[in-house]
Length: 256
Image 1 (cartoon, rainbow, N blue to C red):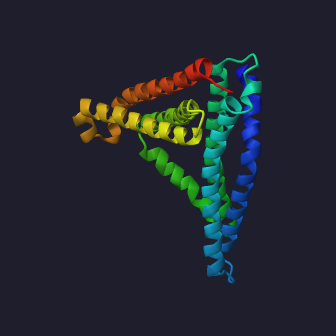
Image 2: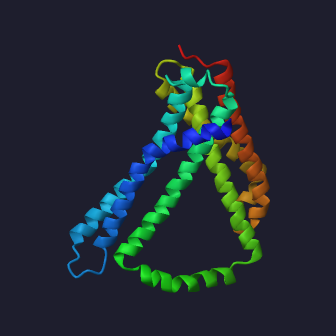
Image 3: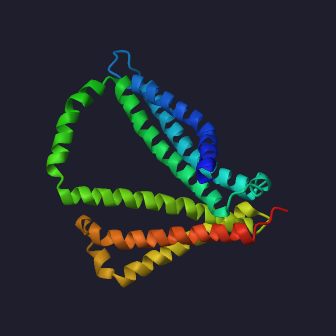
């Protein structure tokens, strides 16, 4: 059933975010043309296109977060929840589908950012030079990075994915807690999220107090030591936020 939910959730978010991606790509093309080597290049157009590109990037980031929040709140806690609650789907599957869909579109937003950079390079005329030096850059990277350092990069990537999952679930937990207020739920959700941040700060400070020397003298090559503990804490936080959402949706959900 989770797969069927994702087939619906992923396109639903995409319909709202795709126009923003197209607009962002258009401003990247404009910026690339403005900074190109043309003799008639205008400084005003460079500044204007740069401002438009920055505004589009900000809009994508803000609207991605807002869309993820609204999708969860409206479909599971708002008016659409009446329909979703009668489906033969567990609360866990609902939460998982929303979380996975949100993560996918956050990753897509990062990929679109890379694409806009590529568009700027292409339309500014610097793509040929980039392609010429790219093989040398990759050869230097492969030759200089050791096997242990590749493992560190993999561990950092895994930590980033788990941290992203934790952040999404933290937002969902705050929204679900705030919904218990019934009145001024938005304000209550913001307050709950601030409480979540304080809780995570407390967990972080507790960890640093237990292992003060480790964090004081931390080096990137100590990532192997940090990875296990960091993954354990992040996974525990994910489980806590997930269980908060699950419990409140199953036991305390009030759609009246």
